Image (spheres, rainbow, N blue to C red):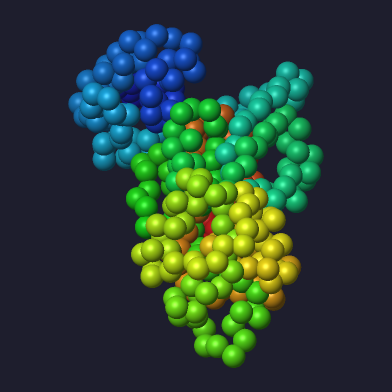
Length: 316
């Protein structure tokens, strides 16, 4: 057997730090001191002869190119270890062990794609509990997964924003201003910004960060709504208003309920959206793999989730 330039404990600390991107949070999660986390990583880097993290005062540690390559190989190494461990005799304790995962997810993804399949997942994996925190799309969501509170994240982010190193791009979906087809009667699509400006708009909560974000996006496309007829923080309420022809709104095609797509159409294209993935665990527990496979298949293998392109090779 080869003499490895690392210990399993160092790999565990490294994997945890990749997920939290915080020495303090990794220390809390692992039940050790922050100095111990730092020393473990310094020793690992010395033994490998490469820098795995970039450390700057006041900033989160980020993976170097060598660190990202090491993380990829670690996942392969852990998968092989899980396969070897699978040869052990499974007793009653293994059957009864349970684990709970916290998942940050977009509201539309949860309601339209994930929740309808949860019963089958729980029936097949009685030892796994999933708790979801659902939110509408926002630039804040990408930051929320960094604090270590969530084990998984599946969120949409506007495609004009950079993808953080702790996130993986899964797919690209269309975004724009959607409304009832009656607003396009007698007009050529896409509608001009001048015509769109005169339509009744439904917006996020007034003076909220989400509304300010959308208004900045509109400004880039020459859109200034002349008439706002309602505000809501709930995507399903907004979708229902679109279907009834009450107004128009900025939406992502993939979270528009499939039953509404005959009546609600794209009136004016805006920035597209990325589907992003976060996984705190680097592959230590095989049950994490089961959760990942479930969430990926629930969304990316669902024909109602319409994409421009898919970057997860196994689901493309």
